[in-house]
Image: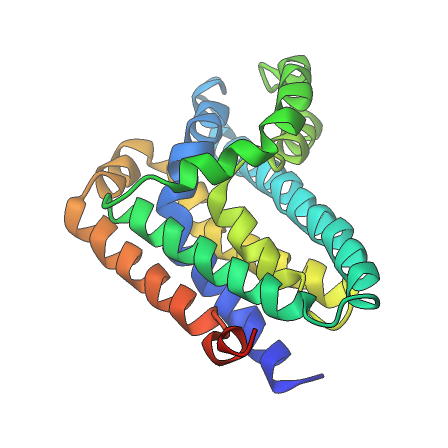
Amino acid sequence: MTPELYLSYPSAFLIGLLGSTHCLGMCGGISASLSMALPVGKGFRFRQTLMLVGFNVGRITSYALIATLIALLSTSVASQWAEIGVLLRATAGLLLIFMGLSMGQWWQGIRYVERVGAPVWKRLSPLTKRFLPVNHVGQALALGVLWGWLPCGLIYSTLGWAALQPSVGSAALTMVFFGLGTLPSMLATGYAANQVRGLQGNPLFRKITGGLLILFGLWTMPLQALAGF
C-alpha cells in the first residue's frame, strides 16, 4: 500500500466533513423529513436513529458502488493510456476548486458539472416515491441507496480521487471514508435541522470551508505533471 493511499482515506474523510454543508442542501431535506414523519412518543429517538442510520448507510453504499464502477473503467483505460492518472487527478483537483468556490459563494459553476449526472437521476428519482413516506428502516435504506445517485459536484470530485487508487477495493473504501465524513452533518440535520441549517447559511463558515476545499484542490492537482503535457 503506497503512502498516497494511506493519505487518501483521512483526506477523503476531511473533504466529506468540510463539504457536508453542500450535502445539507442536497440531502438535508430528505434526512430531516425522516425524523419529522415519525410519531412522537415512546421509543421515538431510537426509531429516529434507525431511520437516519439506514438512510445514510444506503447513501454511502451507493457512493462505494459508483466508485467501484468508475475504478473498473479507469483501470481498463489506464492499461491503454498511461496518462489517464494525471488527467484524473487534475480533474479531481479542478472539481474540488469549483466546489470550494461554490461553498464560499464566489462562483456557482459546479452546477454545470452536476448536470452530467442528471440523465441517470431523472430515471432513478421517480423510484424514490415508492419508499415515501418512510415507515421502517428497510425503506430508509432503499431510499438512501437511490439518493446516493443524486448529482453532486462534491461526490464527483471525490470520485476522481477514488479512481486513482491502485485497486477497486481501495477506490470503494475511499468513498466510504468520504461518506463517513458527511455523516456528522447528515445525522445532525435529522436531530436538529434548524440549528444545522443556521450553520449552513452562515457566510463566514461557508467561506472558510470553501477556502479549505480550494486548498485541497490545489494540493490534489499534479501541476508539474500537467506542465509536461
